[in-house]
Length: 259
Image (cartoon, rainbow, N blue to C red):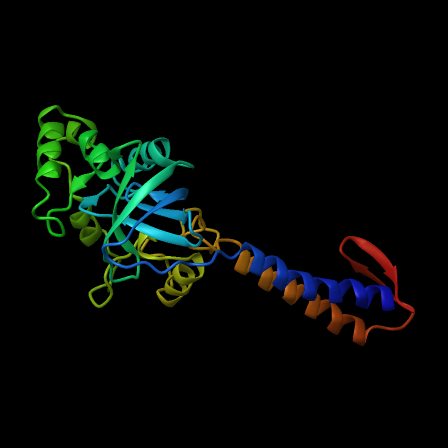
C-alpha cells in the first residue's frame, strides 16, 4: 500500500514541475523596439514565435503582410516557405505596433532581407494595405508577383485572406469575429475560445479533430496531459480507498499487492 501511494504521490509532485519547465516565459516588447531573436515556431505564413537573445519568447505578426489562410490555396505553401526562410534562424525584429490580441506587429529581417518582402515577392503573401498603406515596396513587389503569375497569382481572381476569413465564418458568427490560430498567443488561450464556441468548430481551430485547438502554439499538449495525469492519480487513490485489503491493484501497467 505504501509503495502504491508513493508512486501516485510522485505523479502529483513531478507533473507540475514538468509542466512549468515546459512553459515559456513571455517577454514584453514595445513599439519602436528592435532586438535579435531565434525563430522557434512558424505558426503560418505571417505568424511566428521567437526567442529573444536577451531571453523570453515573443509572438510576432508580420507588419503589412497577410499570408493566405491554411485552408486557402497557397496557405500551406506560404507556411512551408516561411519555415525554409526563417525556421531555426536568427532574425532581427523591429516592433511596429502591438496588435489587439497582444502580439507584436513587426518587421522581420533574415540574412539582410525583409521576410514580408520575400513572401509577397514570391506570391505567398498579400500587401495588407489596410495596416500599411504607405508601404511602397510591398506595393511594388505585389505588382511584380501579380504580373509574373507567381504563387497565388497564378490562380484566376485569388481571394485576399481577410475576405476569406469573412466568408468562412461559421453560422451565427455575427457577434464574434472569425479567428484562426495566429490570433492566439498560447494553446490554452485558443482552447478556451474553442470550447466557448462549441458545438462544432466554426473557426477551424481543431484541424485533426482530436478536441485540442491550435496544438502548435506554446503550451500545446501539456495542459491536457497534466490534467489527465492528475485525474488518473485521483481516480486511483479513490479506488484504492474503497477496495478490499486483499485485492490487487494495477497501477502504471504493473500489478501491486494492496496490503
